[in-house]
Amino acid sequence: MNGMRWQNQRRSENVEDRRGVTVKRGIAGAGIGTVILVLLSLYFGIDPSVVLQQVQESGPPPVSQQEQTVGQDPTSQFVSVVLADTETTWHEIFRRSGRTYEEPKLVLFSGAVQSACGFAQAAMGPFYCPGDRKVYIDLSFFEDMKNRFQAPGDFAQAYVIAHEVGHHVQNLLGITDQTQRAMQQMSKVEANQLSVRVELQADCFAGVWGCHADKVRNILESGDLEEALGAASAIGDDRIMKQTRGTIVPDAFTHGTSEQRVRWFKRGFESGDPGQCDTFNAKYL
Picture 1 (cartoon, rainbow, N blue to C red):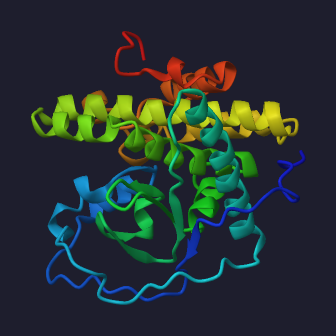
Picture 2 (spheres, one colour; picture 1 turned 135 degrees about the horizontal axis):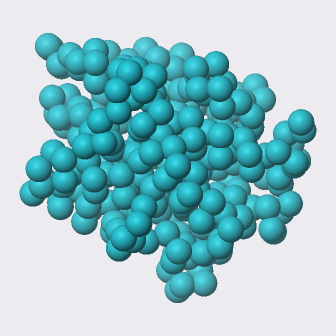
């Protein structure tokens, strides 16, 4: 199976390389439960501040984390190309609706990182922080996808990036603020159900990107779509709970089942229309 056609594509200028930078938590006693970390390590999501409330104190990172030149290693270059492609796609989509797309930054880190949403460790997986409008990713997650989730392939990796950018799109459209305010008034079960709708919309937005990237720039090779669908399936709440707990607890779902994640990604990919991604008013997820 060949990979995506990405080698000769534009690189983004919005990648910050913080790999190798040592970060201290800087807040005494702000440990995060091991169980939470294990569960979060198994899939990616939005705004870790929901979990990291105990490390949400404001102020600059205790260790300076300057932006560095992006490395020449193939993986970081690939990430830069995919980010650039999401920029091209969403600029065009926003322009058509009379809006202006504001590009997010993408931070590469190793081990741990300080964000506007708090201190985060690589075990959490990739995440988007609305507070600083940045996507954070430790590239070791791609190894986890291949080895732990049996979801290899570069388009599977691109799907992860596009999903996080989908959260940025939600932030720009005001959806993030609305849903986070609503969650504060809800029970845990209700908040989880709303979180599922947020995540499935980000999956659908990732599919919208894939549709435009392929139609306009013909980036996909045979088998690439299957890679992304495999990744979406591998990180469904039901599948992960089965692997880690042996039982499935629907009330605890925060991202959606494997079937739901595949369905909404495909809906975005087949339509290319963000208007088809309204998970909040959908009766059937």
